[in-house]
Figure 1 (tube, one colour):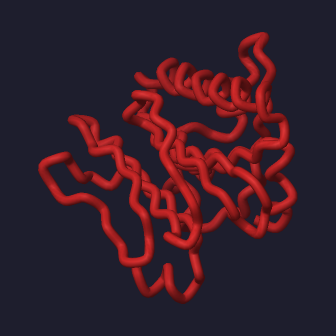
Figure 2 (cartoon, rainbow, N blue to C red):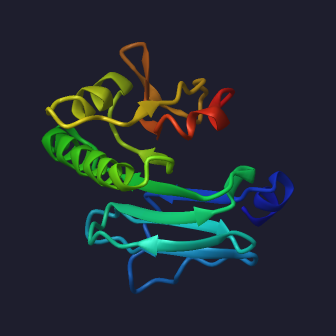
Figure 3 (tube, helix red, strand yellow):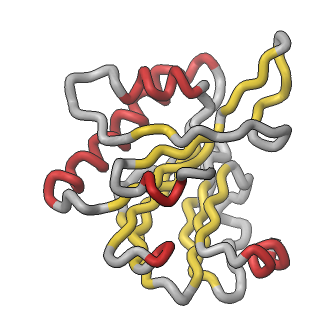
Length: 186
């Protein structure tokens, strides 16, 4: 992982479903500041590594399934970028829960954009939902949805194993309009 991060000059790495409980070790990589939520019984841990050359700090929401970090100077942009790393529970029993979680994310984004309209948002992670379902969850209420999906080119590492002949993209990137220019060729 360290070789890949160095070779590719990765500024930020978001990890989900790491299966690391609090009694295990903390995520650490030289040259990166680590933000981490330890897994509970459902192994929903997330971690985010941010290059130490970038100024960053965590915004706490008291939610074990996400990490929200503000980063300054990302991608040559001036100002602030919010990055939210998400891991939502899998399985049919948690569809309603995933919808509520996506609603919370939408609320976090909208509240911040109301006060700082030029802020960029990148929300990424394992949503355990198909793209259409994610957008349905985000558009279900009368609250404004400021997020749009990035079209992801599917590969064997971005899709859930084949079931019934169809691939499922369960990992997603959502952006607000201010962040879209950097992801035209994702």
